[in-house]
Image (cartoon, rainbow, N blue to C red; front, side, top):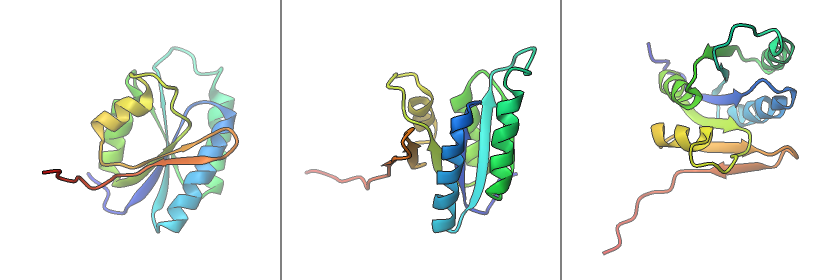
Length: 139
């Protein structure tokens, strides 16, 4: 089922400092009259005890921001996030900074969901936006 309410998606890893992504996404969601959704895609593994405290912390930050946090277990984080974005009417994704690789999460996500604008939050809380531009015909 596809959600009709527009939302802003905070994509987080299992790091404590991803709280800045959730808080920035909350401000964007409030400013654009969207719901806030938080997503973490973890690689399947046998034991999650080494990340459970960090995920629990981010879950608490999500709740404080008025959002549920969804955790998916998948080896392809970009594909899982793109599918989640499609199913949840995501109007913007908010992440950490792009790591520069051609096969990074953001590059792959952008290939699978090219019409979803991206906001990247640096460690110093600076926000960098990649918005859509209209296509122009040069004749």
